[in-house]
Image 1 (cartoon, helix red, strand yellow):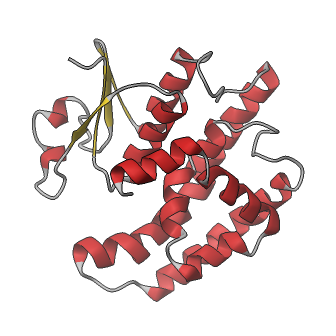
Image 2: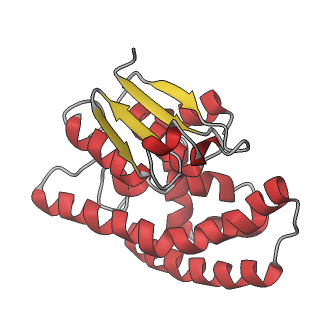
Length: 216
């Protein structure tokens, strides 16, 4: 029996967030595919792992976790001294990691995920057209967030400072998919420092392994 198991779906951005963290730490794990098309995430046995019926879930030994950001934090703390240091090298840096992971979850992710839904998931899985008004609204919202990022990244290579951290990692899956849509990709490429940051984090070996392994 594998010591670590990720229960998720290869098309899930949240699942790939957790997997990216495991690869940054060079940890072995078993990936258990959850058939979301068949509604397996809303049924047993998965619902016992996450009562909210959302992927991913993570098991390590006798412990079970859900919510991808919480999973990545657990991995980063438990394996703090292994491979990539993702939590900051001082109390001040660790606090900044906390700040910018909150920014990702509450400022960046809402408009970015809405764009993902409209441009990617609605046409692919629901067969319904993209709502252009919703896209325009959320492009404007995400643009304002990225203006803040542009200023921040003009002062440091990564969101917290000179080193890659969870604050950067948490953005990877959604950015990766959004870059497939030229109109939305312009929000990133048109900002000099944001563009350099995106190129850097999406070229990391651990992230490239996620993309190649799961055809993400």
